[in-house]
Amino acid sequence: PKEDQRQKQAAAAAPPAAADDRDVAEPPPIDAERRLQPRYFEDLAEGDELPPLPKRPLLKHLVMYAGASGNFLEYHYDPEVARALGMPGLILHGNLKVAYLGQIVTDWIGAHGVVLKLTTQLRGMDRLGDVCMIKGKVARLFKQDGRGHAELLLWGEAPGGRQTMTGSAIVALPSRATR
Image (tube, rainbow, N blue to C red):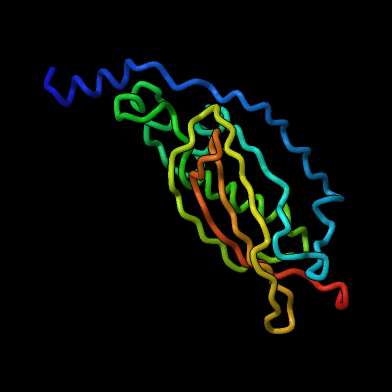
């Protein structure tokens, strides 16, 4: 084979990286009562952390996401193709990771909060089978047009704490005074 083909073949034959050995419990499901609980602006403080959201998708989830999004790039479901391209194995879809950032925000704000803005940056790959830990915190609280707003800092971490995505959100939250 030509030189570039030998490199691809060597990458495909390389053993996968060690599995993630962190013991991360699945988050408790959010039942209807908890989901409907409002989060009030007055109860927040800058620096408050959002409850972490661990995500460990299975190959089935990547295939389902590929079908829903129309993104059928083979390195999301064929390990030989992924390794031939120099990837460490199957990787999560970028927009699936963006959805995880959206989920931590919508889970946190409750039924009466509103997401006004969500921005994200993908900064690295997350491997299938690893825990992608989604985190966030309240960066700033402010009032605008008579409503309480929170600016959130968001990020996703691969094993070892390496940030593979960052983002921010601005949300509007109800006030205890106007409930």
